Image 1 (cartoon, rainbow, N blue to C red):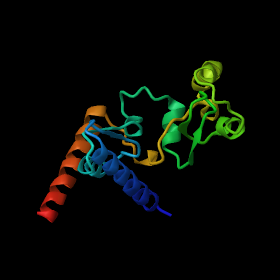
Image 2: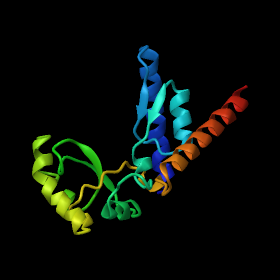
Image 3: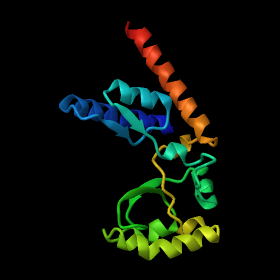
Image 4: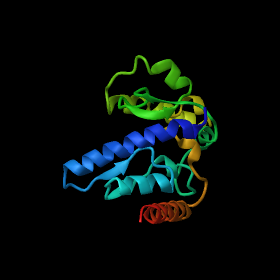
Length: 172
């Protein structure tokens, strides 16, 4: 199954949820999660979001400070999962040995668990060992681009603008 086959139903659900939320409140809505393309940005804005927040889309940016093991994991096709193993707070990560061995028993103990595992994670980064490093990433991490942040943002903005203009012409 292609990544896009998995992403379309998820994106549709996210946009619908954002639309319902925007319709229920006057508070500006900032969309986040699963936003990796200009079309996703356009969809969120069209659904009523005042702005979007991107995260994983910038992990390969030159300025990101993403560690070597993390960058290599982002070039893989490994699955992601929700885990508390590294910090005690649920976050999505690329599955590695640490997640496989500790996720099931990880307590919901943020920030304590974060402080307990911090030296281990630092040692993993220093040893260039991706199996004991927190590899945070969204489900569509394979869409992340390796470029300077400004170029990534400019590309996403241009693609979003083009998608919105296309939609406007189509429905005019």
